[in-house]
Length: 137
Image (cartoon, rainbow, N blue to C red):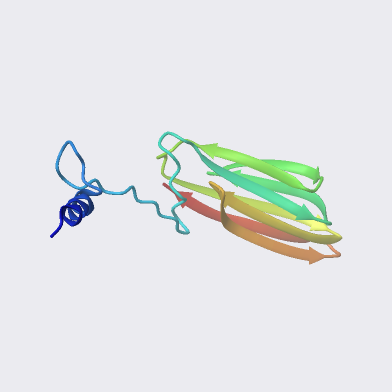
């Protein structure tokens, strides 16, 4: 073997190894699923964002996060709300219920920028639309 080939082989064998402990350094793992949001950087809060759009008249919007409900009346569209959660705080649940008339409506949820759920509806008379789910870290 030539000297260049030996140096190249040595460089390939040591790539990814720690210089202090002599053992390979594992790559950080990132997973996304229906119950586990994308890992946020250490210490960063998780962000749950709701967005509601459409032409309907929203008479009542009830947003329940971890069992705590807030209600808004005569909501103008588009409507957005952001909720933050400290990292490593376990399971969180959400439920958004829209009571509306005369038009169409679309509600979406994203967690840490990832699509998490959506719901659509339309109608002339009184109607209800729900968007709910959970996530944990």
